[in-house]
Length: 208
Image (cartoon, rainbow, N blue to C red; front, side):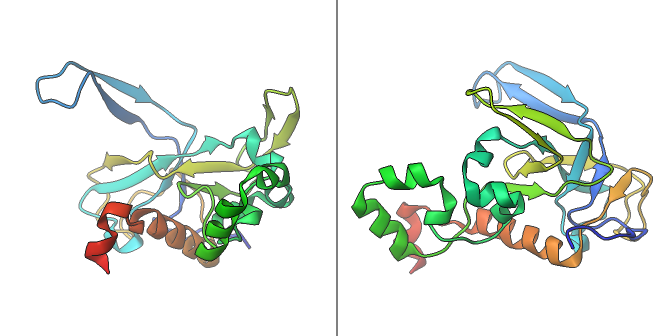
């Protein structure tokens, strides 16, 4: 079960909210004296990325729900169930067969030695739901895909301030519309933890 049939009367990690205003500063350069613009958007839905125990003090972190990419359907393993992108898989499953065939043998060996891992490490797929409208994707080959699946990109995170958010159990829930099941919430927790725990090559010696 991907979603709870009856959401709690509290805010939880992974909850889907009706859209709230999001702002992004756009800088000409990384400098305190640089020129900047403030971009404002109002997505249809957002997902809470604050851990349940960190919801409070008038703040939550959210990420907007985005349409998935049509390229995901080019991989038969994904096309059968797009939520497979949320889970660990073998290197061969992570790409379309025609792409795997073109990978040099030494690179295939390297990936095989690394073992199973997350593919598309910065995204998490949300299954279709009656409250999420379906839409049609068209790729560069003009192939159409109707879907009700959405995704979040871990790079798109926003701080939201609301004085009425005192804790997960003491917060306005009028905008809450969908709640993940405990199992799905754990999958989201595992994948976002993996996203942040990646170690760059230059740091590996210090971490060993």
